[in-house]
Image: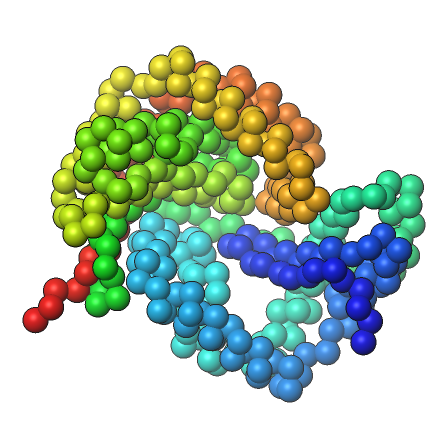
Length: 351
């Protein structure tokens, strides 16, 4: 049993699966040989699949089925995306997971696990002159499978706001969230930069508009914020979230956050808060480069979702160039009632 990796793992998003490992430089050739073998010659049998199927079913049970917030999130995603596969949970629905077979896994593996459908990122104490021969030796020897182009499904126009309410006996603290479909970097880069700045202004920490107004000043909420991840291959999601104080009702916080959204759409953003938000985002990007795995994951995710190295290198500059007018325009294009799904999580009334 070869102890090659210092740490290893995997993760799946809506757009890609990533495998990662930390390995001493002297073991890199062996690690690349093992990973190349796993790409081309993985043995998929019932003896392998059946226990792993139980692992992911248990993972879903712990992370989703036993978590009312996660269950609400699944229903919100399904309501937000009417046609796109983003409406499906990444881990899958429980009834479908139980029916997975070794034949299903083998077919998926043969279709997608190919060098012409993969991105290899190596970060650390190595240079290109050392790495390229290893990549050519181990991965270059695997024949391309000419993976078919994926057909991207488009979303129909959103015609009406949607609302999802979940009551659960496991909920002690009510919560409110609202999602909007939004452009991603892949679809509209200029709007994506503006939306990143907008999310920072509205909900990027204790100095943000929502936290300062709802939590600190008006004390109608115990938490409030906004989020936006621009890295989806297709449509992204812009979201707001807020929690009332312990035992509090959802209606006052919904009215309060609605008033803040209306103020934003009416008045836009100021130059001082714009400059502060851009500075915080750029500082966070610099800090993320301090880790060994952070840059590698950022590069891999970008390349897997249609980005380029030039895009990554120029990101701080693009953020710095965002104007208040661009932020206001992006907000007005995304934050529309008919483009929204509102979720409410409530304690189940006792009979």
